[in-house]
Length: 337
Image (cartoon, rainbow, N blue to C red; front, side, top):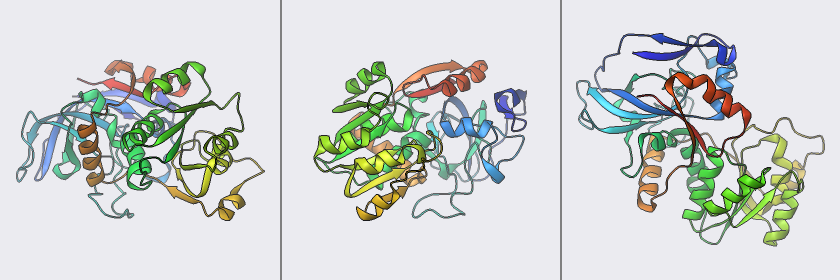
């Protein structure tokens, strides 16, 4: 089989396409022929060597993949050859509260990922691909989809009539918009591109703000709602946190996910967060049980991921370059087989 290996922290130039024997499924394991993968910003950081001490080399990168069961090992009753399946981000986090042990095996970081034609998964770490999704669409679920689900549905507990603010047009943000609308919430969506704003409106955004022409978008969001939003899905990190604090109502929540916007400014509004009793909720993907809940929810409502562009397996470096450019709207996918 062919797979990509990251030979060291040298960026995409350190990615090598290598030949390896097809692995065999052991007891309780499933061999999956991967059909598709999608990229997350975290994958770009990993390729640059930014995953810290847990990162090993050589490493098969990328966390999110879907495919078809090729064979099953002894003791596996839940899957059979031909079943369409999607892998989870954390292989050891079956359910319940997060812990160091449950979050230790993170695909494409501390353990090999899915940028390969075949991969062995523990049977418990797979979910059935929703019938209404293609393999490429389902490959968008394990990290970006589940992170947004955790932020909006599980931890955010968004109810009909509430207001959610999303940032930009990456995978997590678009999923968050879709899930918030699924829950009956109003969505304020931000972007720096008027062309992308038009597409956000098509996806269901009720209000849009261009954060380049409206740099005080947090203040504007608060004015538009009269009291502030119930939840901000914060993917920018410390660089956008000040405006997120301004946007959030007293007692509201900021789901803190990303690090896209760089370092914090010197005029931090963290004291305002304390004064307004806001909650800063860290979000790191979710469990296998959560991934199943996500699949059940989108199957019921017919929600489909937004796919920006599909690259061939031999165009992986181009796919990473496209992500680095920031030009994408939704998920960047790789067709593996």
